[in-house]
Length: 173
Image (tube, rainbow, N blue to C red; front, side, top):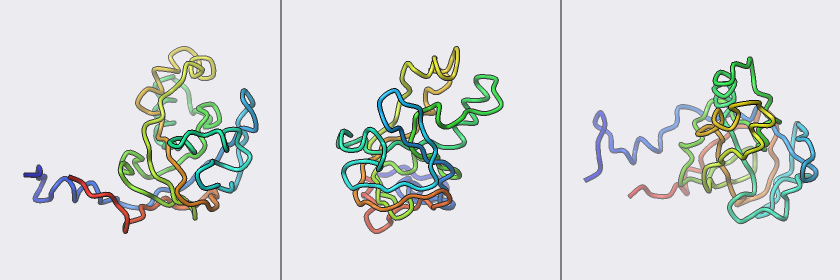
C-alpha cells in the first residue's frame, strides 16, 4: 500500500508543483577548456545538444543538456563565504529559478519550446576546486543540478518557463 501524507498518496504529491520554473541564465562553451559564454537564447537540437556548445553531437544519450537551480548557486555561495557564484563557473547550460529540479525525476518537461527528460544528477568535477576556490567541490556536492536528454528540439530563451508535460508523466509505482 502506498505511503500517505496528510491524506494524499506519495505518488499524487510527486506530481504537484506550485508553479513553473523560470530560465534565468543560459551558457554554452564553443570548445573544450573554453570559457562559458552567456547567451539570451539557444537552439536546442533533438538528441544532440545545444547549438554552439562543444558537446553538441558528442553528447551521450543521457547528457544532452545540464540544468542547475538558481537557489543552489546561492547555497554554494553561502558555503564558500561568497556573495554569489557566477553560473558560468559551474559549467552548466541552464539556470532555473523557482522549481526544485528533483521534482522532474521520471518526467518529461518543456523548457521553452524544447521537450527534455531528466536522466540523472549532475555531479561536480574536480575543476570546481580550481574555479570556486578551496572547498568548491564540497560546496557543490548535492547542488550540481541535473542532466537531461532532448526529446524534441526547439528554442530556449531567458525568461522561458519550465513546465511538466503532464500528459506523459511516467506512473509512480
